[in-house]
Image (tube, rainbow, N blue to C red; front, side, top):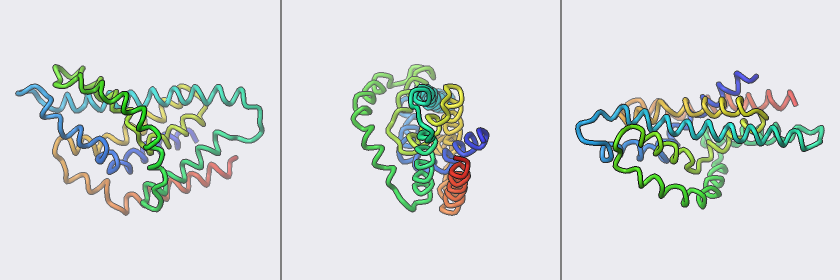
Length: 217
């Protein structure tokens, strides 16, 4: 079942590519203005995404750690963390399928914290070398995002630092194709990830996965 978690997180990243373009794509596309003249953009693009995925992975490790502590201290026969993850999985499936956008409310909750973090990224521009874009991406990895928050509940329910980190790492890998395609100008690939049929199929997969997890409670 753990492998399905990783696959599900990866597919969420792919299906959420259109959402990532809206929130992060503009940042990646604007790299040409911050990269030293005459240098290739690719190392900077890859470094930015590396930093972003590292932040996701760290967040997954932290939530997995919290889940482990919670499972020890909450003495109950009810699998609370698993139920939370299933609820968010259903909400996420509805979100990706464009059936219900309730998860967008979560993004507003993280906006106040983001306002304090985001100014730090401005100090890294212009980029002197790709190391700067790793740090830049690591900061932008904490941008409020309903998709990220939903997958974090899986990390929480894993009750493991290692597994929580791997789940979020898988999600980060799933977001790469769309963001890199946008950054390098391969816009013809974007409609594939944006297509409503692709999103519906993955949404149905997630709903089936939620049903499987519910039956195993």
